[in-house]
Length: 484
Image 1: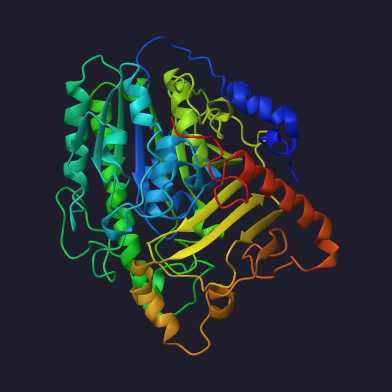
Image 2: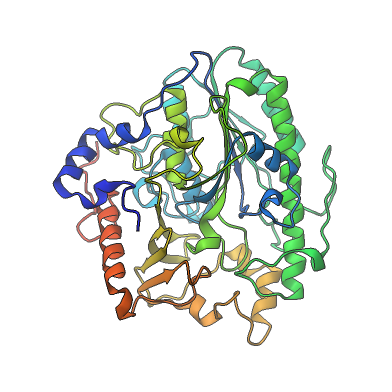
């Protein structure tokens, strides 16, 4: 088990000193820019796109993302730190786990979760250093004032999947900035389900986007789903939305190239959480948090690299700050940020010290409470379910989906190799040997032969929860003293 990543979790008093001074984060993220010109950033955030890329063998057609991967680095072991929309986006924008930044669940409507008042965000920090900032499309984090983008172009509208209009609006804004450095976030609504959960915005043609339809009998069935006609039809609709989004990425990147900024812009593509299907979205299992991450840096000399580094969305803010040569404000009480920049490892296929990631989940919707904390290494995954007496909730869009209806109406249907009972009712601890059991079905937490491994992972997770001020951890509530 690789314990080199974030060693402060097990190093006691020395760790506390490093956490207080920020030395650890600076030591791990140092990156010297090779050029003194503009250091622009384009962050592309998909909505519910699982690890589905044609360049990785998926039956979905994603030529634009395949091309971007060929021009940069594709991280094949990249993970969201939470599999819920608002919580994941809040992590991207703050560099803090959702149990630290306060975005415990969804932001919109009655759910009404929000960042803590003193949390600083990525667009805010970049603006303090002269960056122009803009968001296109979906935000899904509260309060809006905390993100403080200079412009919000084409805010998300129900049913709108006009990825061409989004790309052109982005290009127009980029060109208007002249020589000023910029940070642009493209927040797609694809491939999230539409309002009735049975469609994915596929009820009409969209401008400039060739419609890519998929035959249900030709789609590949992910390992967490059963092979049922309703599931196949649902996946075909999802794949169409993925391909539409991919066409939007192509338009966006053409706009970036036409602006003359392709060679001075760091481009990052990722998704907020797993595909919107049972056993993926809203779960910390493999299919819920293992997602595509593509990073194209003008500084990188190697192209088309596949990296096995286990990186996390907690590393995105440090990466962007590193690229921009920007530091969080002095005296910020959440320093050091728990993640680190991936820029120094962009040209390494299997770098040392990137062998585990942590994940956290508390809520999705306001009435969907199931707090879990998790640690994943190359060999094992460990889950601590803080309220095991509760039934695992299902996100409403997933619960209303054709897939879930097909599964629950078919006697004996499973979620891949997992029974519905095992999915909905979980013990306090789960331990899986990913080499022997990649589908995370055989729980080894009670196996005497794995007692030592369980104890090590349990201790490491407890150190992480303490270091990241998890308020679900006894004695952690109000860890910083009175709010300033």
